[in-house]
Image 1 (spheres, one colour):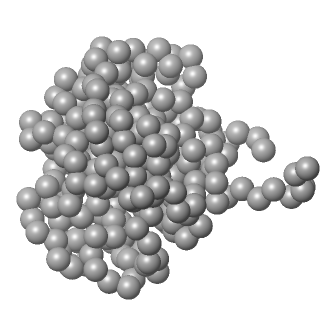
Image 2 (image 1 turned 90 degrees about the vertical axis):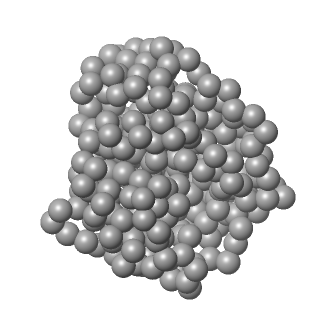
Length: 270
């Protein structure tokens, strides 16, 4: 397989491998692109929750981004866990230096098990400064509620919240609808010109750890290869659905999904 593009991931590490940098690298690789990384934090976690979070110094995060990009220039950037004001500000400064246009932001705020991953001051910097610099932001419903200061109970609320996020300076918004209780999951892609609804069947499983990380990395990968943002979202949602459906059922809590669902081994292994 020939490598299609280069994607730089700025995110935290998940020791269990289901989310964070590990999920991002698996996603980018399985979709045929080259993954680079700038790690923002190291977490000790498993499928039942997070036991500790260790921050990487802001200057080291900037060094990772800038030193990597001066040698291998990324075609797109995916941003995940940014948990403190110094970290967010350092990432913004580095983005200004390396000047990559295609940037996907997954505003990671709460872990699957409920652990809060970002403070209020960081949320304000993200809303006031970072959102304006990205091509697409991909909040789930709790994150969209925080960003828009509104309650989301249905699809109409999702559209209303997305429009409020656009007013913060976002160019494109993809609100993920998995938190709404319905047999069909509806994700909303929205910008100033169009509203697109993506409908997917809900799978009866608790093994959905890392779906947000995976989705945003898949969008970044398809976008880096020249697909439109709308098409990238559609293809990424399809990839995540297949990953959930074929999940390995590991762990006692919220288990990982199958990032290798794109692979088929044609020869029998001895």
